[in-house]
Length: 395
Image 1 (cartoon, rainbow, N blue to C red):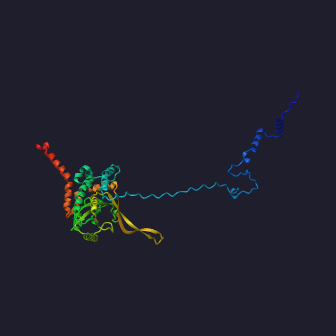
Image 2: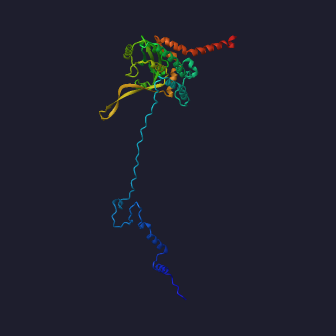
């Protein structure tokens, strides 16, 4: 029988297994460790340098101080997050005032928005200011024929008639006769809001007639609302400044200057440093615009601003702002609440009652009032005719 001989590689494996006591799985693990890719230098990428194989540290190697056994390992510090400071809250801006109502476009824009603004204020559940019963009745457009001062439809119709009469009259004046725009203000006629409705406007009109004794004029009394009168009058908050705007003619510029200087010397206003009397001559094309401004309803509120100046603090040597003792006024658009307050204030007053005149202006104002009251007369005549034809009246 022929002898069977194992192949050489099988015979070597058997001999190695007899001499090595390790199991087959342990020898397989040693083979994997020797062939581990971490111990073999890999070819470097084309854009990188070849990395040397990592060798385990020897016991004799000196470790850095941060890695020594005496000091525990500390995690790397976390990157500090930059905290941006919170922006300072911007002060609440008050609504800016409308441009002067000296054109028909601005006049109509200012007076067509009022009923809706008051209605929006009334619809608010927590509205602090409510319309009075009289004001609610008078602001209705169908009450314009009575010329109530708080009715914007009546204001528009009255302005249409008044500007037509005024411009025709001033155009008929000789070219050598100047027309002046005059505003008069007095602290005596500035009262708290709660007392403004009962103020005697005839007294103010008589004072104006006495000061402009030698002049012809036509004018209108206006109510200006100041919302921070406590800046100059402690204990006051909202005040009403009753003041007239006037179109004056029949005097020279020099005489008009003398009248205003006399008023500025003898009287004062609520705001220190503000003169009671102001005037300026008008060009013929400016008369209609100023007449519109004179006839406008209260659309702005006024606030008293303290004038400041820069100065150095002697203790800290820093620049600070200090009051100068002077004041100025600035106007803003009326909000819904103050708009309602002004409607309540003007309730019970008529446009022809706020208008007044002297000299040649009396005849001019009489023509304006007669035409403005034509609708009221027609309605009254219609009502009288209806009562006459009533069957109850016949019997």
